[in-house]
Length: 487
Figure (tube, rainbow, N blue to C red):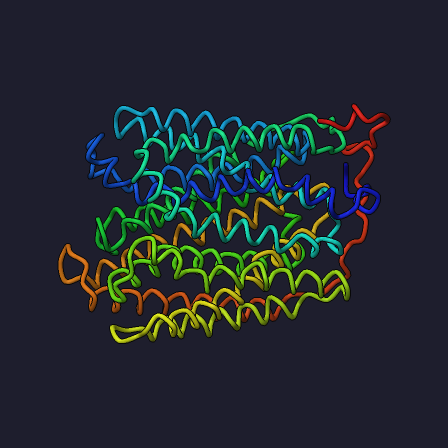
């Protein structure tokens, strides 16, 4: 089934098809945070406490590096086969990570898992773009937003439960039955036209992008924590990131099949969407990591109780996304939602920054609801805006660019927020006063990022949404028989 078949198949069939795709995306997002509660147990079992942060960093770096590569290959060889391959790589990495016998093995295998996760994230959004034209995509935004919210915030909760009852290895093994279901579901349900373009991989671009992303994330992770901001190590990483970015930009103009074709940035909507999605990624990670910490340390909630207390943040996300999607589908208008969403995010994070030792749970819940509404208005709308700004042949690359900026926004936020939080602690132990001070600094920075995203959203150019896209015949020939569309 392609976007051209959407009306005939009906929204119900599309939703059934997307369930398997969404399950794959959920796996990728869960595993970014699910290992957090398992970290102490992993250290007791494997040792290597001094390398513990690399269990998360290796996954994040591999995801970020793999995202544009998976997106580009999907553009050339077909979304379905690439998405299935990404599931397979992710499952191999999951099983191998669960069987790791040393911290070094676990870090390396987490990189394999993260590489597969990059294909799941970008593949899911690109498949949605193939199945549903932008004008009709609002029908399904609530489902996608709910999966993203559960994946980002539910990871620590699932990780705690699984580790406590089954052991840390099951934080990885739990992916196997879910991944097999997703693989079988996509194999049976998803039908997309075959593509015959010859794959020419831009290895130079991939290498330069890896250097740029790696240097950027490491500089943000280590600055002020392991090394001083002005140390040779941090300055060297910053210089490597700048030089790598400049070289990558030059290489993309010369490559036959660039990883991120420069033409996708010619319309200002994609760069604007990237800025907005980076801010939302930072807010989501900041909320998922530090709100439960605030609730447990300052408001004396239990670990499981703090999960329930996140519902005021979670519930408005699919609701806001569904409202925005319905309005977009009915009217074709959409600029108001990223503008309103980033305004709500700025206000909500400023409210969260006012929390102190005397802030009650009701007030915290109200502040989170404002943030949740802002996320609901922006999370999926930015992807739709970006995909509508490029040609059909570049859907995967555009999806990869936005997904990459979301990943980088979240990764850099974790690093910067962690440095701010550590600086607020009087010692190595958590205190109510130190936690309140740390979260205040974190959400002030988040508010500044959201304010920048608000200004960027004002620059969105509201152009008509595509109805039923058609792809060039050379790249996406229409299937001549039902069996020809199963690639």
